[in-house]
Length: 589
Image (cartoon, rainbow, N blue to C red):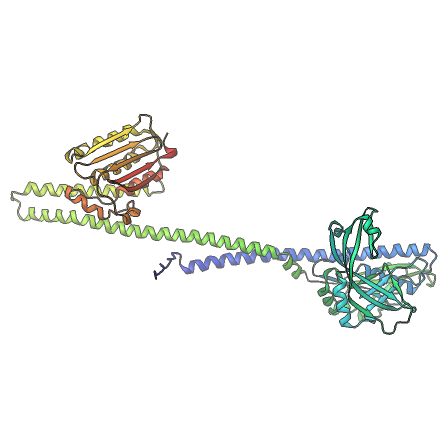
């Protein structure tokens, strides 16, 4: 089995951890600050909702009291209590925001509690009823378990208007009956399946039917009783009630909120009696410290009452609220947390990738510098050794007959070193960030003819035929000196590696320039590295017989120059040798 190569990481682990910690701290700080602001907004919204709710309930109370008084009904204590129980019940889920629960209670002018939020069934009878609405406190009849079960269905009971846009739907409805004594006899929850129906089908339907705006009809296909309670002490003779209201506090937020509501001592802690209250005009509130309750809102309720000595009965209504603003903020921000975390992860990955790239480039640059230095030291070592040897011979034997030979060799080795240094300087310039390329128009034919002429002594000496074909109108845009250097490197290579009596073919058009030589082919495993710096491969041995030696910089310089000009260089084998293709694309015209 081939062993997988271990991937090298260049970024130090300490640096990676530091960046991750910085980003994480930034994320936590931003999310914490935003969550705090959202939480403060929920605190404000909860307070405003409770204040608005209390004002709405008082407005409803005033309206009902006025309508009842206008109908000639006496507004007594029982009427006030039943009416306020009814108003609190029908508004039980009104105004609720996420993680906000409230409850309310009413005391008469003597300080006795006459109404309170709780699980109730209410029904508003005719205006002539002197006792006000029908109110049953369900906690007086049902057990805790039965209340929990009914509350679970209570949040689902009802029908929203958007169901009429559907072809069929399922809903829950309550069914309530009363015995002869006016006490609850039975409470049931029905699950009903409804669908749209044609007028003819609805007209002949035996079960429940409803018609909206005398146009669209709906029929109840199935009705199943899913929960029921029966009063064992109910008398015979039952009357089924309609248009009633089954109400649980916090019902708009579901069963779990009902359980939370009933277990909250603060919401349940209204006293049965208070000392003090509003005066007869409802302008001044007095509450003794011994009976003080931590209420959110306290408002007066004014009722015209013939039984009251002043002619006006003044009640006190209090509201309490439990506001989990932090939980509301956390829930509200959950998608922000998620998107922020994903954005944070993306930023971390981008930064770590940039760091990895930077450290890798630094490591590669260091490795390149080390390899370059070692290679140049190795290249310089040979001519320096030769120069030292000949210089020592001259020192020891100044009158030797080989003096001219020694001096020629010293000069030759010095020139070789000078060439190597020039190559180093050229590479250094190309790798500089300050390099500025000139934009000049270069006739390709003139440029290549000039370079071919420069190589003429070498090609004639080795009897190499050069075939050149290029139209006059082929031009390039770029830095003349650099492009000349690049083509010179390619042609030098072609001559160096071409066999004696061989042939070099140069063909240039508007898109590319192809240079072929009839020399030894490059081993396939060496092809990916031919443009690497200081690399000449096994093919270099073929040139030793011509007295030529390559530093391994030519193709690197050419490829680098062409790439800087937006061109590409491709080196490949062909049937008789090696082919080099320079594609200029947009750089040529």
